[in-house]
Length: 150
Image 1 (tube, helix red, strand yellow):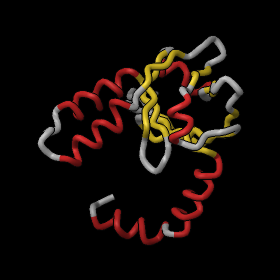
Image 2 (spheres, helix red, strand yellow):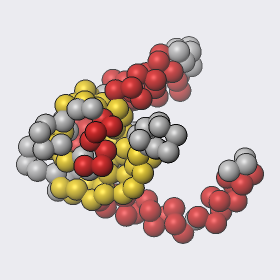
Image 3 (cartoon, rainbow, N blue to C red):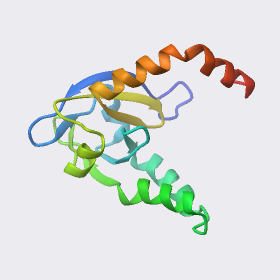
Image 4 (spheres, rainbow, N blue to C red):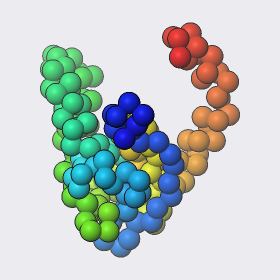
């Protein structure tokens, strides 16, 4: 739990993926996930992992979007149709289905990044490339965030 008592995931962890597609969730996050998670296609070719409570909040917001707009339909399909309910085993692992591993180009190693209310799962190579690009542009990103009061 975070300082305010709300769910808070932070940090960056490199993990292995075994031949069965199992990936270990970092121990510090397991208690908050209460044994079950939802994993779905994310953005930037990553996967998003949510606790059941956070997933429910997101699914409700997505279902309230207007279906008359192509972009909202596409985003809802990406997130909802691609989702998989997963159970953590006794070792704190989940099995990622082939279609999700393929979407994120996951092979032997992955990076799990905590982003407050969700975890993102990246291929190790894609995460390194993304981080390098973002770090290079960090001053420009900070300036844009400053414009909106962050």
